Amino acid sequence: MKYVARLTHPQRGAALLAAMLTVALVATFAAGALWQQWKTIEMEGAERQRSQARWLLTGALDWARVILREDVRAGDANAPTDHLAEPWAVPLQEARLSSFLAALPDGTGNTVDDDKLAQQVLLSGQINDLQGRLNVTDLLQGEQIDAKTVIAFERLFDVLGVPPAQLNLLTQGLLAAQKQNASAPLMPQRMGQLSWFGLSPQALQTLSPHVTVLPNRTPVNLNTASVQVLYASVPSLSLSDAQRLVQQRERQHWASVEAFQKALGRPVSLEGSHSVSTKYFEVLGRLRMPQTTLQERSLVLREGQDLKVLWRESGSLQ
Image (cartoon, rainbow, N blue to C red):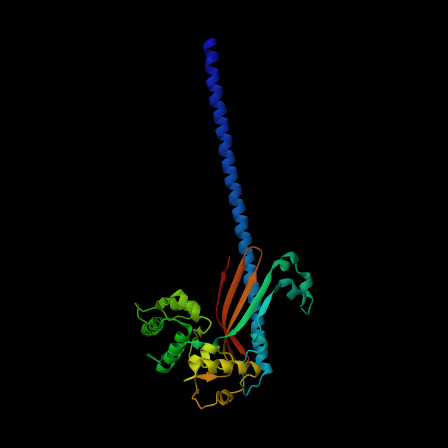
């Protein structure tokens, strides 16, 4: 009997250890399942907010299209002009979504199911005139590089402090893309895609406010071009004269290219290369929500009162 009693103690210890291991294993599995469930809920919540944000940014794009269409209706159809004193050029500062919903004329803003979310969502936006910038597509004239446009880009690169080698990469890349063979890079459609030609991120960041990529050749809008773009695109214009003209433009925009030439004070050939109206606009929308911030860029072509969205791109900022 004493021998049997001695054997029961190790057995009890082994049973207790097995029970503890079983509890620890079950707890581990339970914790893993709970974490997985939490992760799934968080991912679903973030994806739901991103979907809501995309839907709301579509509304912001429609708002921008309405403003651009009304701008045409309010202007002179025989002598259209676009300038920075028009409503489309005023940025939409960040504001709560609830304030937009409350302003709806039919009162539907008062029936929003998730009013708390509407209070937390912040919307902002901006419309930019892309013809106030130098167009990369203008560098190509058929299958050749346009010498006149190259001079404008050289002046712009110089005043912005971008190395001339970057312009060489750009022109050589465009010529290679024109060949459309298997080894050639694709023709870019956005500024960021110029990196395909080897342009550095620093150069692209410096050029972005003054350079764009549009589907076809476009004239520079004298009413919206920056000092640097005016200096680069108008032959023999000095930087001080460009600054003077922009200051003068702030008081009164130019109704015609001839009015600009008169303000310049000397004859210069701008036919085909400059205008006072615009067809291509960039629409920027930004939506800040509790768990995500989404930004969207769209390229809009306006021909008369007809507006067409050529492309849209969006991405989360956090």
